[in-house]
Length: 261
Image 1: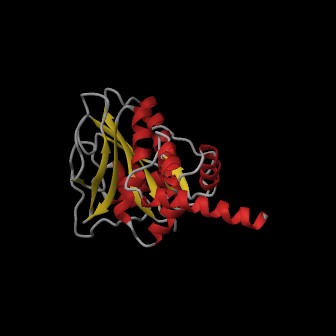
Image 2 (image 1 turned 180 degrees about the vertical axis):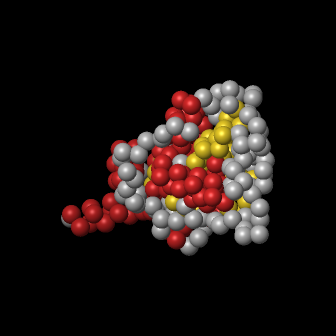
Image 3 (image 1 turned 60 degrees about the horizontal axis):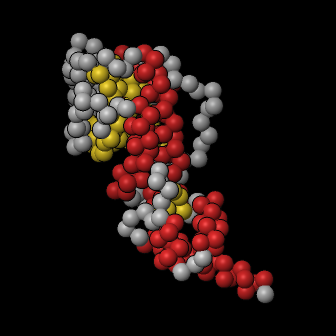
C-alpha cells in the first residue's frame, strides 16, 4: 500500500510540475490546483516539496515557475536567451530597494550592451539604456566584465576620454580592476557621463564564469557616498541571488562589505 501511495504522490507531483514547466506564464496556486484537479491541501503539500528541491520557485507575486534546477540545466546548454526572463525579478527587487535605474549588461563586440532595465522611480535619471552600448573602461558594468575576465579590451583600441574623470591609461585601469576584484563591485563616478554615478556587480554562471553585470545608476544629487555604498551592497546581494539561480554554488565571503566609492 505504501509503495502505491508513494507512486501516486510522484504522479501528482509530476502533474503539477508539468503544468508549471509547460505554461507560458507563471501560474498561481489556484490555477495549478484547478489545472491538476488536486485538492488544495494536496497541491500545497506537493508544491512545497517541489520548491524545497529546486524544481519550482515563486516570483515576487507568489506565482510558480520552473525552479533553479531547470534554469541551471538550461544554462549548461548555453541558453543565454533566457537570461532576461530569469533576471527580471532580481532587477525589480533591486529597483524597489534603491529607487534608481537598474540595468543588466553583457559584453558585445568590445562594448557593454544593456539587455534589460527597470526604470528609476524618479523623473531625473530615467534614461532608457536598453540596446545601447557603452565603453568597457568607463562604465561600472564594463569594469566588472573586465575585472572578472568576461571580456578583454581590444588591443588596438585607445581608452576614450568621455569626461574629465575618465580613466585613460592602462596602468590606472589595471589598478582600478584590481580594486573591483577586491571589493566585489565596480563604481563609475562621472567617468562615462557628467553627473552620472553607477555601481555594478558580477553575475556568475554555473561554472563560475561571469556572464553579465548588474548595475544601479543615478545622478550625483541622489547618489551620495552613503547611498552609493548601500546601492553597491544591495546590487551584490541581488547579483549573488541571480548567480545562484544560474547554478553558481561558490560561497561568497560573509565578511565582504561595500566600501567607500
